[in-house]
Length: 117
Image (cartoon, rainbow, N blue to C red; front, side, top):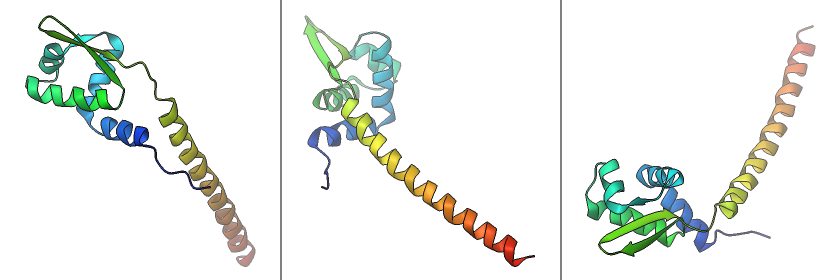
């Protein structure tokens, strides 16, 4: 049965498609940080960083908590297991195709060698 992308996969891959957002996830993997700290680290405006954080939050990859005037970001509670499983499925498909191609190439090499005798 054909399995279509879920909205969760769509949101995750959209969030991961941007280098800044991937950098934010790497940074938050080391330690929690405020939106201001992240904006400074990535040399961008607070508004720009808030937009990136919003995309990551909607994908469930980042969670934020506001205490006073400071909004602190941390990694979200869910991992990337579903995304990794989807990628692994595509990897297996490609490996199977490359293995089949190897068989064809080897057969052609043998035929060329036999024809050359």
